[in-house]
Image (cartoon, rainbow, N blue to C red; front, side, top):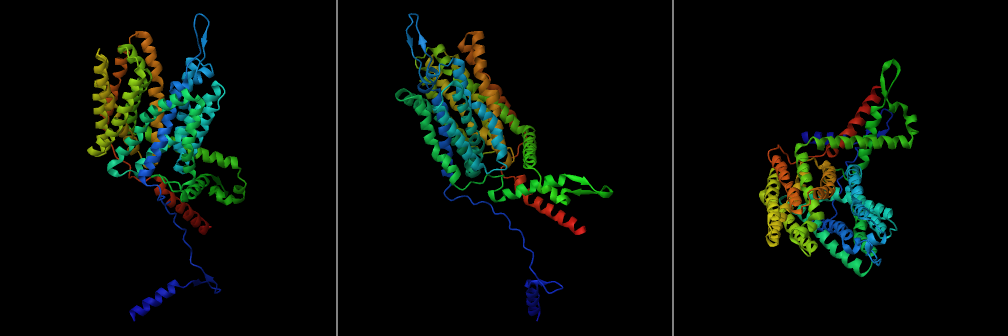
Length: 535
């Protein structure tokens, strides 16, 4: 009997209800919960790492190519008798001064520094994988523009576009790799990714020299565009990947509704009797709200969000300490890459200083970067261990590099300098691991972007001219190299401070967008239903 009564009760509850007039009322339908976008099966983690490594390699191949003698070329020269040798490459064809030539080689930095924080902020409202596709499209347009340039200003603008395109990839690729790397190999995977920087430079020198000498410097840029084009297409035709800390594509509309509801609820008007009423009471007016006003509100919301995120980064002691050490480190490495061959030629009378320094940088860069990543994973990849490895390898590497410039023998110099560069390059994996794991997942693109901006703006960009001023003042390349190398010791000291800071690995923390998005929308709907019921 008890079971029969229970079955009858369930049957009654399952039947549709009827109102007083006998009309059947359908049960209220619940809004479907947005599902997480499934990761495409084709994109295995190793395939993604391989694709991003190839893209990174092409990026830095471009930097090496434009600096090569085959592409960059030389000025037109004339002797005392009046006979002239025509210039070659970009510098010779556009008759550029050394200053103008230097502007072209660093013009991409302008686009990179401006666009990096913009792409990082857009990642909160646009799928990050699609942003990479857009960025690579701009990059391809930039290198095609470089090949088709007709003057100094045209190629300068084209190089700026290359920097804009590269900004999206630099800001977003590392978080994608960090998401999909095995937990015990995260730093090793980052090390493999950043190993492509010295490798790309080296291949770019060779590629630019061969193409420029045997064909024409313009073909070098055309070849780069062809190499990048398949990845541009891939960025748009493949299902976009979801980045940890960001909503999947299906829930973007929910975010828009939340932001709209929040902006509407903040706009109140005073009605009769001094009671506040929302703009929902004026529905007819809202229909005719100008599109420009809506766009301004959206832009304002994004700017406010960006400023809040920047405040979080600047107040994070671990992040600031990591970036400050990286700025000092990049100050030295940037000057090494520009002045190293010239210093070696003057100090040790090297006949092929370019090849020697280039070879040491490539070999030590590849081995050091990979080794640093694997060592941190072996130690257990935590933020304190990353700071220990950063400070230790930088200090010992600085000692070897400093000692190298003290030797009068070129062979002892090369041996000590190679060991020093191997240790110094071991920082690439750990320093980026800290940038990615000391912040909330939704802040990782901005964290990488602002780290890139800071290290270029205060590191390698000003170091080369400042070292040149120092050399003009003291006229001694050995002393100049020793003073420059000594800056690595403060970098090691800054990172050593990080060992004692209270740090939390925030990789597994949930983002505000993941936690608050749906409840906020539901709460707004509930409040409005309640207010309408009361009225």
